[in-house]
Amino acid sequence: MPTFKAPQYTKTVNPKTGAQDPCYTFNIDFNNDDYISFVAESQLDLSLQSLQKCVLDNLDWWNTFVGQFLQASVKFFSKPYTVETINKITKHTLNGTTSTHYPVNVVLVPKSIQICSGNFMVNWGYTVEPMIDFPDVDDVKSNTIELPILPVSNETNLVDGIQELNMDDLPVGGASTDDALELDSPAKFYDKQRLKETRLKAKLAVYKAQRQMVQYYEKYGDNSSDSDDLETSDGESEDSEDEVHS
Image 1 (cartoon, rainbow, N blue to C red):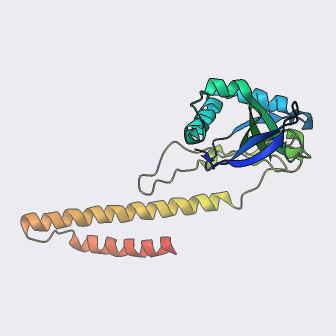
Image 2: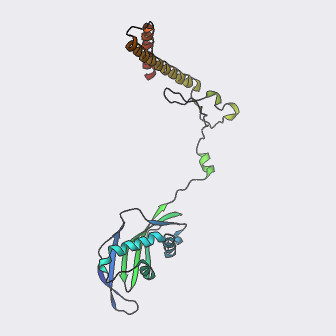
Image 3: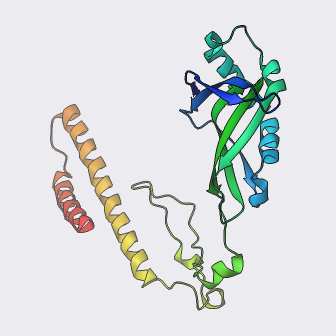
């Protein structure tokens, strides 16, 4: 919600009568990013006509803004006014910094309101923001290397959640190009991953066997005949785990 400061009193010359008319200026602080904006294709679009069109395109925002001003400044007026009454006497000014590159996004911010000679003058400021622009496709291809898409198997390893890469589906021969990135020894990498997965599965099997053995002791109170084999397997699993982490 904008903050409307107390009015500053000055006098200005009435262009029609030459008399000194009172002028009240309400400076505005915006503490949010609820602004309106439009796209300027060239410097010619930075105009009051574009401002007026943007206001008309955002009438709900504008009427809310005027209503907030009337509510915040009601104690300074001799009688209550409506948004419709203010709209009939409203005029606008626009000031900001131009850009050297177009198109740009023009963000509009009301900086102050002046009430002089029966007019409700809104003084707008604006800032320009560059638009996102992608280079031509041909320029992108000439400066980049396209990598081949590696197919992924639908099967998921239940031990560590790693999806397996099907090496038989990799593009070879005519499907590869001179610009494609070559992987260093993919078969070796694949075999190493499969070895790690096998060791992890073995460790999981030992863990399950240990758990069943504990349940057996608690239920029957004597040792299982396979306890020696389990201890051996457990030792091998610990060695395998050390190798995996190495």
